Length: 164
Image (cartoon, rainbow, N blue to C red; front, side):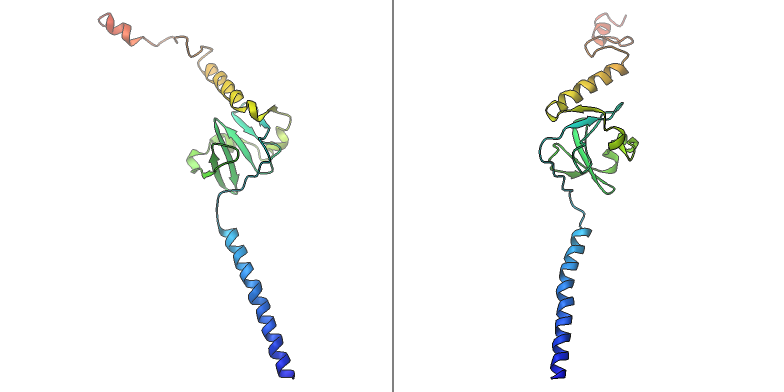
């Protein structure tokens, strides 16, 4: 009776480890797998514009979620992902394609810019386009895109006058 009890105990002991090992390996498999991040957003997020930049971030979303010049970005660990929507689908962004502006964000950007300009999702693209247009005009010294800029010849006129 003692030998049967020992064998039974040993079998249960080994089965316990064997049964526990399988989920452990499955868990390890999941943690090693580097896949697309799961950015879960209940609805269109309100965004905050980071001052003096083209970066918008979603303060109410737990994951890092950014909008920058028409694209959405998120990061998981050291890897960046880009998508055309806040819902994805997400694709790995090669390091050279990740905007350098993200590297200039302070680590505590959520608390630093919490009082920044809030932009409802429905106004985001128009807000960004307007902001981008103002930035371009500022670079040109105040000229709109329809005004001719000094120093640029109209090549058609030059050729029509025989090169004079």
